[in-house]
Length: 161
Image (cartoon, rainbow, N blue to C red; front, side, top):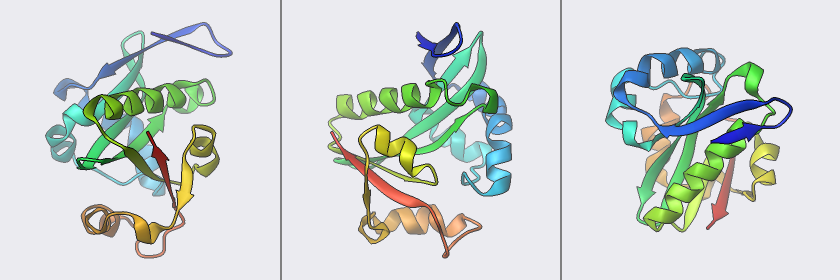
């Protein structure tokens, strides 16, 4: 349980279940529409459900992210979203901290992210890296589906654990 700053709100971090997919899709829909977050089908989320961490307030999803494993030493934090009225309260930081804890427990050495929120991740110890250094299979599996591909303004960042 975490307490968000500026509000006396209790946020519980939990693993996602298949029953959460519909509400996850509703929360992320505006960010997908603007192209901030890559669209993922409900089937794709279901296939990767074990990688998702939810932030819930009184049972309602107020944020989530996924820890996607690329190699035995590299994972990616992706699909980070926080409900608009809960942004700036520590929900995103808590989700990232939990994802990093999970990565460490798995033996992951580095965590990657591609984001438009560079300063947010830098505050959490991530450093910018050239996009050319990210795994090629990431580009062909995910980036190619993005409406901004190949002209992308996202920044690649990495954190060594």
